[in-house]
Length: 432
Image (cartoon, one colour):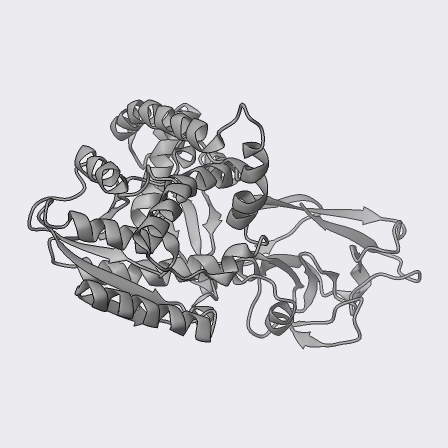
């Protein structure tokens, strides 16, 4: 039975101690309702107090409110304490994607419940979730650490059902006669996790010789064993000294950097940003953007990770040729004529004020898109075009000496400064 399977997993991983309070994070979906039921049946045997937490993200209107009422009613039946909170997540995602903002708000609420208490939060992550996370991190170029999937326990969070499949959960709910809610956004394959869950894994499962859930789970177990050895070596090699860091082999350097970022900012490093930080170690000074407003800084031979406000993200003067900004390259070349009329890559040098500088979007920026007969504040345009907040924060903006927007990443030249057939001094700008 699922009760015995979860109990053994809890005991094996030392998740719960007697007299502890376990707060189940319950959304109302199948996985979390199963988690609540299993913990309810194990509470006396394992000698813990069970409570429930529900966070309303207010992303699906009446559907979100209905989920909250469903959870409240369910906890009433079980006779357990339930903690609720909510937030308008859409207003919180200026510097994060919607998913990141929702996760941050939800876990902040969970952490507040366990503060100064002998308590843990139990989430309903399953074996399926773990395999999906493996593929997500694989596609993002993660190293061994990212490919280990979801941690069994981490910072007051436990995952008792990480060895249970989603099918086992559905079978248990059916046998127990337990109802649950279905989040309509779970079927939106524009989200990478849903695409992997609904399109990729079912295709792999069609082949008789492949069971992606079990085989990937075995791979995750093997990767965790290997990683434990490397993690021990990384702890011994931990330092902020740039000269020592740049001599470490990549697997150790990756872990040293990731541990710093994870501890300070809850960030798991991907391959793109790892190599950006690695290149920073070879410079006398500088900074590289890691995520939104998080930067790696080489300051007099010491590596630091800092959260910098927008005013600290100073513009960088550009030159003809190659200009590196974080993990991107801006190529600026002199050309004699416009070679491709369909692009917006060409700027008339006679129309701009002296030098060009690269930075990020500011509140006062006005932009005149070449292919639209409109004038708009740049931030408003990006919101209108539904550019994700995390991407808006990182989009590169090129200005002239007077502060006029000349070029915007993904949009091209401002039509005030765009070259035409009569232009005599032309530069081509590309952002890679």
